[in-house]
Length: 240
Image 1 (cartoon, rainbow, N blue to C red):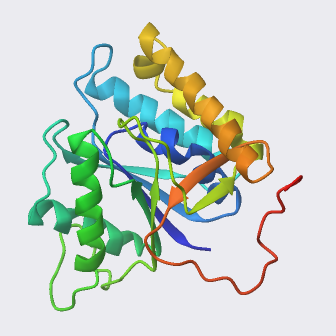
Image 2 (image 1 turned 180 degrees about the vertical axis):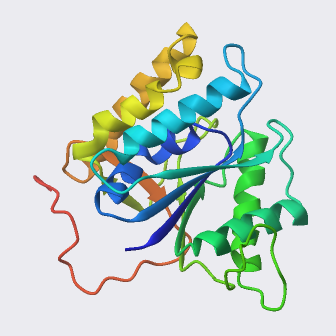
């Protein structure tokens, strides 16, 4: 089983971008850690304590029937995230302590400055985590590691069409993803205008699923080629 790290600028970004994949990975027994870079507050209907409870509940939903999805708050300041060496080393420490083999973070093209900064931080932290003869804060004495894969999920504030490198079949977990998003009542239930976000996410799942001939899918981007040992894992797109 793999050690998987999913980094989100704010609690709920991971669920929006790849909640179905998180549930899928947990069901397969992988060791999944969600790293929230900020607490996501302030917001009109939320506060730090409420958001923490909602995030914990969302992780529980994604864990149902599988390995427990753990969650950790790094504690950078929401709306003020900066790409700094200090931030890079904090994330590198998490990569080492978790011995992360696969890392997910937001797609680098985004309108939200926090998202853009977080992605830069994660990209550089991946390199920093492998450096020898230097401790990283919070690494718990674990050895340097270079995560083999860095994948990008889409949770963008930019009105752009996703251009995925691959799409994950999340058909059995599509509704669980929606449940994990609505677990954030302060963000997607209480504010009436944000309820439509849930429907957008549901529609996107159906659309991307249709691109690979399944009921629901989540798109991902990679800058590095994925190697195949055979065509056995390639989804057969019906009617193509």
